[in-house]
Every structure is written in structure tokens, then in C-alpha cells.
Image 1 (cartoon, rainbow, N blue to C red):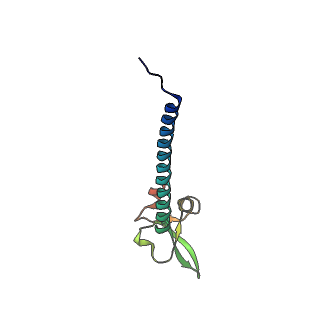
Image 2: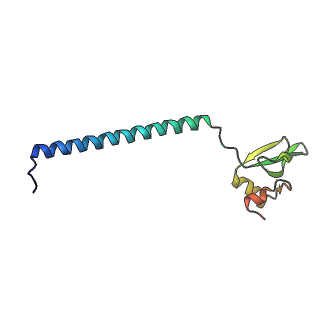
Length: 113
């Protein structure tokens, strides 16, 4: 047999459940705020990513001209280089006729065979 629960008791039960839901929501909000702060701190402290490729330049007739495309960690590139994004490196090799370094093989990483 079920007893009749008074309206006041039902409202108190609903209030307890709502208070519990509110605490859970507050906890979730606090956790997400902590994650955002940690992500912002990490973004400020990490150095920007280095491009994966670089263009070695040589002096021809007193002005710099492209010599070869290298991967960013290639030691054969020399001192006079400029960083390249993937699209720029790919364009340099395929459209501009710049040679790919035979040692680090950036053309393989770029998918140019």
C-alpha cells in the first residue's frame, strides 16, 4: 500500500534534487573555468610552432636567390634561410623549380615524388 505523500514533502524532495543539480552545475562550471585558465597559461608559455620547412638562399650576382628547400631540422641548409609553411614549400618545389635537398628529402614529406 502506498501512503499519500503530502504536497509539502514532494516540494521538499524536488527542492533537494534541484539543489543537488545546482551544485553539480556549479562544480562543472568551476572545472571548465580552471581548464580555460590552464589552456590560456599554456598558450602563453609555449613557443610558436616552427615551420616544417625552410628555404636556403644563395647570393647570385649580389642578390639572394632560392637555392633549395629543406626540412626544418636539416643541417645542410646553411645560415641564410627563411621559414616556409607547407604550402609555400610545396609551391617552391613543384611550381617555382626550386630543388629539394637530397639529404633531408623534403619532397618526400610533402608527398612530391
